[in-house]
Image (cartoon, rainbow, N blue to C red; front, side):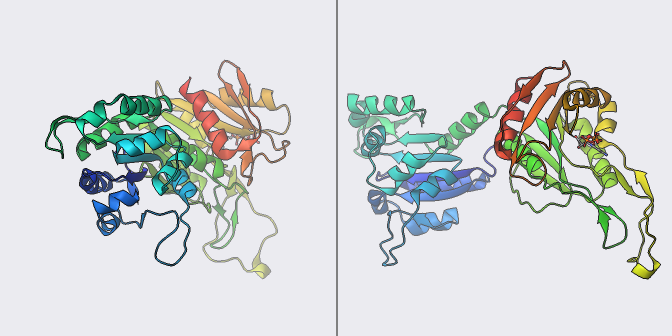
Length: 399
Ligand code: CTP
């Protein structure tokens, strides 16, 4: 579902249509969104904070400083940044005017000015107010800021007059939002497989051969793909990361063989497959059933080769699938990367070198180059793994 996992900040201002906002909260929750509500001081006369707190399952904010004597300062910046989308419904003529002019005398306006996400306004007012050139100008000013105006309805208004100015019905707001998200979700309908993290190859029940991969790069790629609308299957080794998104299905595994089996089960259905896992190349030829005692231990461990999951998938690639590998090279980086790309039948290879400070294993940052099958290179600066994930998805989307 398009709204699943979306974090929606709903600002409710003082209009008779505020009662409809309670239905809107319910519908948003039903669609799988997480909802936080801010009421303008005037809105409290029309709808109760308790109703909205109950429906949203979250505390309702209203004042920048709580009036309950706790002197608690409510962080509007945090709320603005928390939101994936902000909706102001109903938006009165007064609020629209303040938004259009950067005014900030309540919590909704403060959060609006701090929000970096798409903002939607659903105006509600009497027909003459709606027609007034001042209102029209404010609405077009908001559109020029990139805010979306949800069309008003036509019908009987609170004044008894009939005309344009009714707030859109909650279901219409939901439909508007869903369509807008779909339009902005270039990966909507696409299925993406990502492998991430290390694999652990058991020596005995307590010891293993592994590596220092944190899984951060693969998790960032999964998060970004889901943000772009894809359905993501994330097959990952043992990591200390949490990621909860309605469109990400996480499949934890331990060993390379388990990772291969999990990949084989789902790969035929995928549109894009990204192998960022640091798979252990070798595993102990036998894993002891019981913990090996040191007085009985051998001083060497026989190893055997693990399956190459990327190469196996490259050899079985379906028409139209985009296959992306990762490589870590310390010498002859470009030459080796190109031959790896060809050998494993990849469309792209993301190269990182351990020579760049702050790049690669365990770090929060990475510095990559991306090469395609035509030997075209793109080099990127050292960035956070989230930003690297965005760069990688940019390249893949333009492929
Ligand atoms: N890979 C895999 N299965 C393996 C080994 C690697 O799927 N058993 C994938 C990794 O997820 C990565 C790419 O193959 O996408 C890395 O290839 P690899 O040949 O292991 O290269 P490097 O790690 O760069 O190391 P080396 O060249 O030394 O083998």
